[in-house]
Each structure stands twice: as C-alpha cells, then as structure tokens.
Image (cartoon, rainbow, N blue to C red; front, top):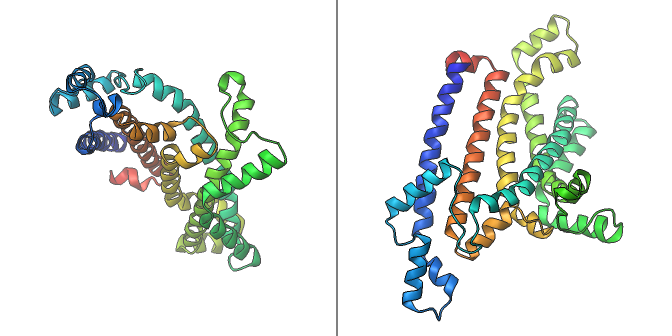
Length: 315
C-alpha cells in the first residue's frame, strides 16, 4: 500500500508542475493590460508604467512565474490588483463558503444516490426501477439554476422557510449559516445525485451478473447477503470516480448557483477577477482549484486500493 501511495504521490506532483505551467501560460497570453484597465482609458503612459512597475508586470515571464510559484509554496499568493489585499486572505474568505457548500451538496448527493441506485438495481425492470430511472433522467435534464430559482420562489418567497440569498457568516451561528447554504446545496445536488444514482445502478447490475456472485448464491447466500457482502463493494470503483469528479465540479463550478443566491464564494471571485483583469487572483484561484482536483483524484486512487486489493499488488 505504501509503494502504491508513493507512486500516486509522484504522479500528483508532476501533474501540479504541468498544471502550473499551463495555467500561467494561458493567463499570460490573454490580451489586455491590467494596469491600463485599472487606470481607465484616460490614464497617462507614465502613470501606467509606474503602476505596472508597482504590480511587478515589467518583470520577465520567467521571473514572474518563479515569484508566483515560490510564493504559493510559502502561502503567499501575491496581492490583488483590484482589491489591493493579499490574495490569500481573499481566497480564505471565499473558501469558507465554497468548501462547506461543496461538502454539503456532495453529502446530499451521496445520501440520495446510494439508496436510490441500490433500490433500482435490486428491482431491475420493475415499476420502481422505471420510476427511479425516469426521475433521475428528469433530474439530469433540469438546469440547476432554474431549479434554484424555483426553490427560491417556493421556499423563500412563498413559504418563507429560507432566505432568498446572501450568507450571514459563520459568526451568526452554525445552523444559521447551514440554513443559508441549504437551498444552494440542494440545487447543486439534484443533477449530481441523479447522475450518481444511474452510475450506481449500472455498476451494481454489472457486478451482480458476475460469476462469483452466482457462485455465492449457489453456495446458499441469499440475494441480499450476496449484494451486501460481495457485490456492493466491488461496484463502488466507478462510483468513487464519479464522486471525485463531482466534488471537484461542486467546488469549482458553482458560479451560477452562487450568483443566484448571492453567495460570495470562489466561483463569483473568479468571475469578478476575470472581468476586472485581476490576473494574479485568477491564476492563484485556478491553481488552487486544480490542486483540489488533483488531491481528490489522489484520494480516489487510494480508495480504489482499499476497495480492490488487486490494485495494490500490481502497483
């Protein structure tokens, strides 16, 4: 297991290095000058040059890349061009909203998808199975932003059970903050739970048709015992892949939902930074999101090895 983990860790480090080069190169080729954007169209050339020097934009590409990477390694992401504040502080303020939201949405996704997928698989071809698959198809097809606005209309405006948007902060209390994240989390979880339930059903049906399951049944195990003792664990491998991808999406791709509910998370930060040409914020946030994706995939690989010991023996 240690050898397998070290091998995957090496792949993680290589991926991070390549990702940093690609992100930095892509940001550098984007047209437009942040200093000119910040000062406006009537700014004098000498003023723009002074601001570029202050922001470190006159340094070479190599120097800027090395400064950016070395700063990230020490926890210094630089200073925002727009907010004139350390990027680390800005990201930390937004991350305390986006990360709990992603975890909350993923928890709801798993709690719904697992029993629904197992139920559909164990009753293949029945009315229950057909109803579940129809509901999941509808869940995939419905745009989450439309579902979010529908929930605001029903639960916030009509029933007044939740607020229509905003975030009171964790200082207002854990349950008050969690309540503010509930509708956004449900809106994010709906399509993800539908996808995961379908994958769970398909993977479990494939596993239940394997020879070793039929052998276990022939030796006297009931259908339920064969399912919970043998089939379910082996069916989790593709499901873990989807869960890893979904967490990355929920963390990085919630920009529309954050705008619907006026949540000041990472998604809105990236959108604002792009529109304001705040390149250092864009670079740092995208790199952090890539880091999160790679780390999640690393943890998924370790989960693979735990679920299927054959992976450890071939590492």
